[in-house]
Length: 478
Ligand code: UD1
Ligand code: CA
Image 1 (spheres, rainbow, N blue to C red):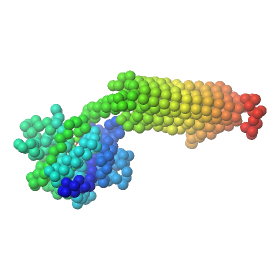
Image 2 (image 1 turned 90 degrees about the vertical axis):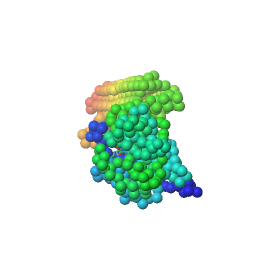
Image 3 (image 1 turned 135 degrees about the horizontal axis):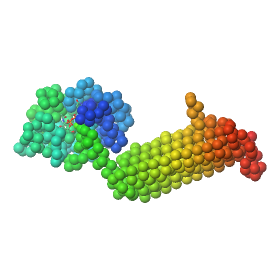
Image 4 (image 1 turned 180 degrees about the vertical axis):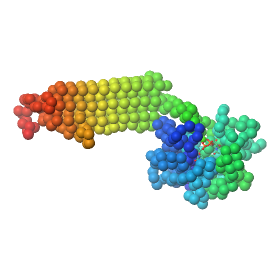
């Protein structure tokens, strides 16, 4: 019966993220450094949210406003609470800053470190479960531990002769004997919330760092006759903390390898050189797509089946359809490429560029906030900004949509079956009707009606094209 009552205890999460992280030697707060393209703190919050706790509290201090913003990218506002720690006096003090919110809660508090980003939700769930079930009535504190070959830098778990918890000793405070211990404190714990805050008041800062250590709480609890349990986990990668840039780079490597392996084995993606690609864990890539060396795929990018992405290309937060060929050295950000399109080499698709099915963009073509319609082509040296191009149109080499007059951006609308001659300047706002064409070097500063051929600078209309069709349907011309 007791057990059941405990199991129903509500769960809150507290994430410690106020420190600067001196060992990073950075002006950026540690939890804002990125792993897999997202701040460390986002990883922790996403995992915490998977446990569906009542609330997630984040203790903020250094660059607190930025940390807050990063957390809110991951969590709903009503779900996230922020607690300021004015001065960074240690992890015990960090938890203590949440006293007014939590001290009277009859809940379980899961404490996470903002700098331990690889922890998995199922590991945390196991920790919470053991905490609630310990000896049938639950523990006052349960510590997540792991055995490391090289425990340097971590707090050590000292057990008594009976193998039960005795105390945590920090690296800087340990005796030689204590520092030989290889079981370490992950910095992740469950506490009975009320008992935690009662005990925190007793923590002192008489240690090597002059800090208030959260790690003193378990010892004080057990001295007061409360039970402290240890949850020893096997996967050390999950528990690794980031304290310096070397650790961050090593973790990045582990994560990348894991992502690529999963894509090969589960999704059926071919990597010509799996060690030399950088693929976001949030990306998805379809079956039989071939990724060449030195490709970077960032964020929530989705790539369909049967595509080829050649070397030197970076694709960020974009959607690529099926059977697309992306040649070498393209940059594609926040863009959409339809099925069977061809891109590059050296193409630049900027935010809100959209290529529809079968469209083609070649060397040194830049697209921004523009649509290139089905089977339309812009093969060489072109800028398409704020432009909409219909189907089966051809944009000649060196065409520029002159969208900016120095103050405002203007739109260019190009219809279907249009042939824009090489080196045409389209001075927006401008419309080019279906079936129209421009001669080489045209500077068009007014709309070009359907089926007209425009030439010169400024452009003049010299003749009507597609005479036959037009005779059949004169309504087009007015
Ligand atoms: C801490 C533990 C150590 C454990 C290790 C696991 C303590 C005293 N030591 O050491 O036993 O092995 O984590 O990774 O807790 N923070 C604040 N405010 C502060 C100080 C820290 O919010 O005043 C935050 C930091 O931003 C960080 C986390 O708490 O996210 C841990 O702090 P850190 O200084 O990295 O502790 P460690 O020395 O790694
Ligand atoms: Ca740390």
